[in-house]
Image (cartoon, rainbow, N blue to C red):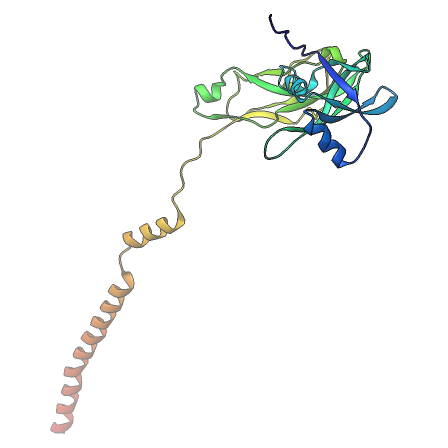
Length: 243
């Protein structure tokens, strides 16, 4: 008998009583994870959900911006995952926050920026493409949330910067991030620097020992001057004797 394909657009939740940390641990021991549902002007609910269903949503093409059906006690509502926590060592899900949404009301979300094309600054100038901003905040209807914003970088060269204002225009999506915020540019490959200790040692080896030479020359000059003075003194003594 074929296995049913899991529905990525549906998340089933079971109501639970709000309790202590021990209650949350008990939920996890039963193979579920604790969650909270709020929004749409309705009362917040504490529920438990299947972590496998949550993971399928988070790892889908639209990720945490996925709009799905949330089923609680037979009632369905559109919802999104707005926050989630992982266990730092094992990486397992610990808790999620779910928000009810209305499909006819705009909302604010962060959407990833994807760079496409090979920059001229890389292909022709030998530089490196650096992406500075990886997400942009947008406002749109839930059904118009893009899975990503593509930015063509083919014409990008040294000295130019692509900014949020250069992102493709879309009548259904409004950019909320600063238009002047840089997104990508070309940087130069850094040359390997010689360590300071090695540079000093190299300079010392290449420079002759001038102090010793100067000192030696000075000594020779003084000795020569002393020798030159001796005959002059002897000559003066002879003149005195003659007198």
